[in-house]
Image (cartoon, rainbow, N blue to C red; front, side, top):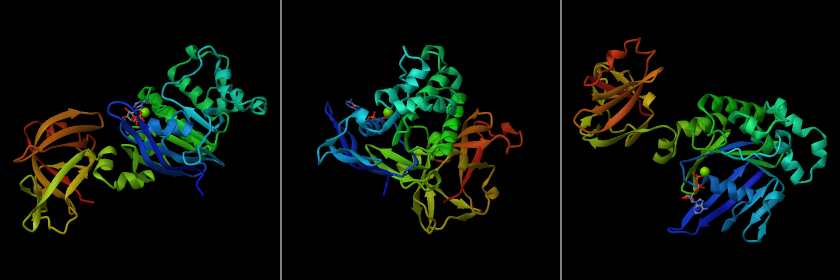
Length: 360
Ligand code: ADP
Ligand code: MG
């Protein structure tokens, strides 16, 4: 049986227009699992977490966390937030400014009268685990953003709750720090597993942290699976777009082959047979290769002629925007600067080129 189970969760907001923020959502989480909820702004991620924490009252549904039912609309069960064994870590650190780090971390234990845990050194241990052991007597205003976020992590975890909820906790940190705290969180979960739902709109965060990831769309889950499964086999155009397959080619039947915007799709000088799995093709910019002409296609590659419209330098890669010949379809390719052998001027605005890609 799942450790946390969410059945038919629905939450509406009145207003003009009224919004169904969470729409008959089902989700099961195993004990010790780190589940990531990924989706664009406004798809209902925060509302889902707030329903789990008891900060919003759902219209419908049932939520079981650990051994207790914390919400059940049919049986009128609604356990108060402070009686649910659920920890929360927010994007804004929300530390108490008048309390030291020690008191901030201790707060969930004090609020729930867990005196034994305060005495047994839980506060010091979790502070050590998130690298804040030396900061216990400071006040939040004396800490950097990264340190404040570590304290907030410690406070969410200190009572060893049945479930820890994270709402975009890394998004206020600068890129390098975000990477560092992400790695620390990953290690922390590996060494002392806890059950977590981690919300983000950042796909690389989701891929690296999630044991499973769920892609949300307008209040429901569109796909759930391990990150590799979702990354390689998105079930819909929506999921594909969201996990970085930003480039879209629409193929149409052309006699016994395929074409794209009136241009026949080529494979080593042959047209691509209609049996190929085609229709709408979704690609990541680095799935596209640029070559001088169609004769340079590799065995399993398909090609389309295009013109370079814009090139920008990105350090490890060049971003090359191309327009397919005879149409206004534009695609963006990411060309590794290493593989172009230092010849970065190979792709210049106005040059003819061929985009090469594989169908999966
Ligand atoms: P996310 O966290 O994925 O960005 P939210 O859960 O915050 O999304 O919001 C989901 C939808 O519910 C949005 O359309 C948002 O405008 C709406 N919403 C969220 N909170 C409220 C509220 N308190 N009152 C009215 N509408 C809300
Ligand atoms: Mg949100």
